[in-house]
Length: 404
Ligand SMILES: NC(=O)c1ccc[n+]([C@@H]2O[C@H](COP(=O)([O-])OP(=O)(O)OC[C@H]3O[C@@H](n4cnc5c(N)ncnc54)[C@H](OP(=O)(O)O)[C@@H]3O)[C@@H](O)[C@H]2O)c1
Image (cartoon, rainbow, N blue to C red; front, side, top):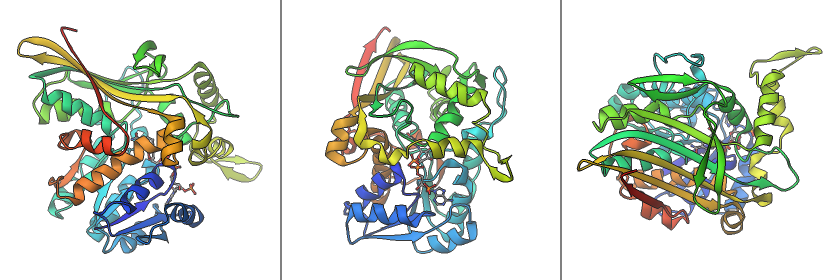
């Protein structure tokens, strides 16, 4: 099978390396608007199956031409381009997968009820993909991605689901930097400053940014961390797909991420000064986006792996009922930044996101993702995942509690 990874940044380069070393793929094209970056990744992967190509994710016509003859397109650019890449996949007859979607497209204020979550911008292409006999896997990274699959795994073991809580914790630091996000800083700033989507009483609603602060006990060595409501993909699809499509119900769903005080202060300051604005402003005759300037001033996430210390843990706590008893499952993965870099040459953040996309691609190539159309990760069969994750050094842990 032939794959193209479009956007060979921190995460895309992890996926590309795994596919190049897998027997399921005989050709892996590294495509990026920045050919130098793609060539760097090609050199690092050093495998005859790999080649590079300049492709611009904002140019549908150019992508349609570039995708012709490629079985699977893996989207590693920022989510702003998803719809265009999907359109090009339909034009070229290629299957598609991404790791995130554009949650920023919804502008419902805090306290408001969302008419339709941004996930549906892509989900509404379901018919077109089905008609073309094509598969489009959405949000197949770590969170979203594994977090959704873990919710599905728990739901399969419950008669009824009551709550799905996704929790992302990282006590990592980067040597020499006080504020250095380990993945797309634009996305981090955007997600954290926006009202956060949650689901309650059958409705998708918004909470204020930085709300819901609490201490969550992440498994050791991550430990206790302060977590906050943050806008994220999981709370846009899990209630509908686990609750309605799979018929397990879901009364409540939210996503919280750990942010240390320095990050909270820095991001609040960026927001307060208007530096999170993605639109161009005039600076002495030059038009620039303040958020692009902030991102350009921060270190490139793909270069930070070596200096990252500490551990991360991402898990889903699913509470429900089985045989009349209240049961909860906390299913998670955890990784050490230092060990991951030493063993795989990538930061744990990039590695834990790039591996699920690669596993989804390998399962797809093996015919284990038979679905056509557009769907989120909770619609994948969770059965092969724990073994595959273990193979790539990401063992899955499960804590089952009865009568929580
Ligand atoms: N699901 C999860 O758990 C999870 C976690 C983290 C990240 N993500 C998602 O993963 C994706 C990649 O993140 P990342 O950290 O790898 O980002 P990144 O390091 O910034 O990589 C993005 C790559 O896309 C390239 N690019 C930008 N504009 C392009 C265009 N118009 N055409 C082609 N290529 C273009 C960038 O080139 P330049 O550097 O030249 O701009 C860069 O090489 C993002 O969508 C992010 O939201 C998902």
